[in-house]
Amino acid sequence: MRILRVVVIIAVVLGALFTGVDRWAVNYVENRLADRIQARQGLAGSSEVEIRGFPFLTQALSHDLDRVDLKLRGVDVTADGRKTRLSELAASFHGVKLDGDYGGGTAKRAEGSALVSYADLTAASQTGAALSYGGAPGKVKVTVAVDVLGKTLTRSVVSTVTLVDGEGGKGGKVVRVRADEVPGEGIPGLERLVRKRTDFDRSLDGGLPAGLQLTALTSDEAGLHLELGGSNVVLAGS
Image (tube, rainbow, N blue to C red):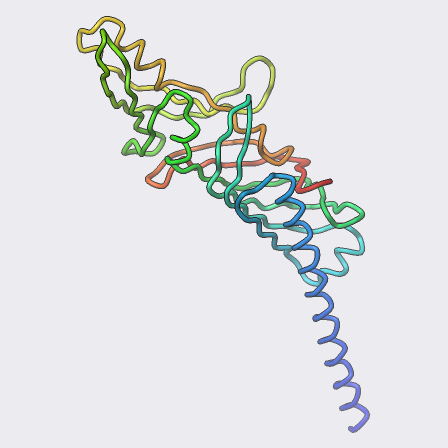
C-alpha cells in the first residue's frame, strides 16, 4: 500500500509540474504572438491571444495549433490611402502552423467579426459627412452640409450600406453607401450635390491580416458590423 501511495503522490506531483510548465509555455507564446501582432498592425489599442487545446506542449513541439483566438481593439486599417479605425476585431484561426520562433504563423482558415463605430466612420469621412444609425439593419443616416446659391444647407438621408466586389480586378470587397432617396425640393442640382457627399465606397481589406477578407456586413445602434473569413490567413509574422 505504501508503494502504491508513493507512486500516486509522484504521479500527482509530476502531473502538477507538467501542467504548470504547459501553462507557462502557452502564456509565453500567447504574449509573444500578441506583441508581434500589435507591432505588425501598428495598434494604438490592445491585442489578446488565447491558444485553445490541452496540452499545449505537444502542439508546440509539432508547431501545429488546433485553434488560436484573437481579440484586437483600436485597429487602424488603411486602403487606397484612407485610414479607418476598427473599434474591435475578434477572429478564430484554425489549423495554425507556427513559425520556427513562435512569433507568428499561418492558419488554414479563419473567421471573425469587426465593429466600426459611427464616430470612427464619421472621422474617416473625406466629405465631412456625419454618420449614425439609420433605424434598421443595413441602414445608416448620413448628414452633410452643401453650398447652394450662396447658402449652406444641411441635409440628412437614409442610406443603404452593402458589400460589393472590388473594381479594377483588385479583388476583395468594398463597403458601399448609397442614399435611398434625396429630395430635390425644386432646387436645381441639389440632389447631385448631396449625393456627392453622401454616396461613397470604402475598401477595408487592405489593412486586415493577409488572407482575411470581408464576407458580410450589417448595421445597428453600435455601428457597422463586419463578418470576416478566409484561408491561408497570416496570424502574425516578422
